[in-house]
Length: 300
Image (cartoon, rainbow, N blue to C red; front, side):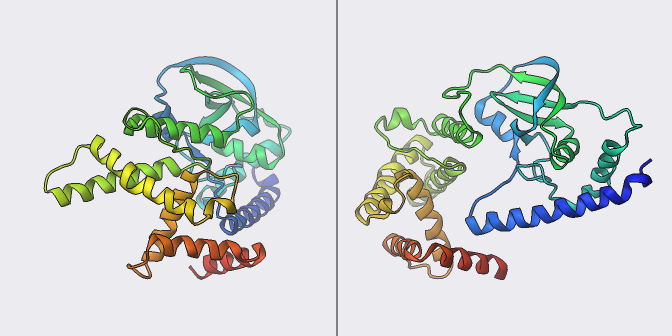
């Protein structure tokens, strides 16, 4: 059976791997990511604990956004990244093409809000996407914890941002320590970056004082001395005007990351230098920026 459809399965693999190459190349140029979402990270941030088995259901493929353990092997669209899964992937294609076969068992998923995370069956989901299926049969375990600010119209990126925000506030207690804080991010990953920077700042303060500085004290010192001061500089230099749909906190994360990159070349670069460099980059033609970014990625 397998050998009969092997050639077709191999051709399908070649085509899907081409799509992966182009997809990741475009992501690099745009500075974005199409990585599959790690369920364990989401479960930790939301404190997920209680599930109910909902039985076998037919679920939409486009609502499957993550995986329990194989999130590094596939893109967000479940294109295969890992060459090592080739044989298993092609075998599933052959089974799907064989009309005499009884078919494959349902996959197993966790449901959180409107989205599904694959517990078992990542390869079957990948093949189903490749063959343009719209849905797939699955055994569903649904988490019952309430999810704040989640509506049927909420997209997965907004969902992730909200999960990160809750995790950030639980760690820092910033709503209590600085009730008027203005930290709101519009892209995933930023709150995790801020937690890292606060922890690093706590280490610096502890080294200066010669004793361990309490975390709450480090949070308020970081917010007052680092975040607020940086935001004032960013606003005064007009960087926010370049992207009116982004928040001040977005620009803080962006500037700090760019500052760290520039300091790899020159450890005396200032925050003002960083902002001017960013403004200069954004003043270039978008195509020029894209080509420069692509060239930089290729050289690396």
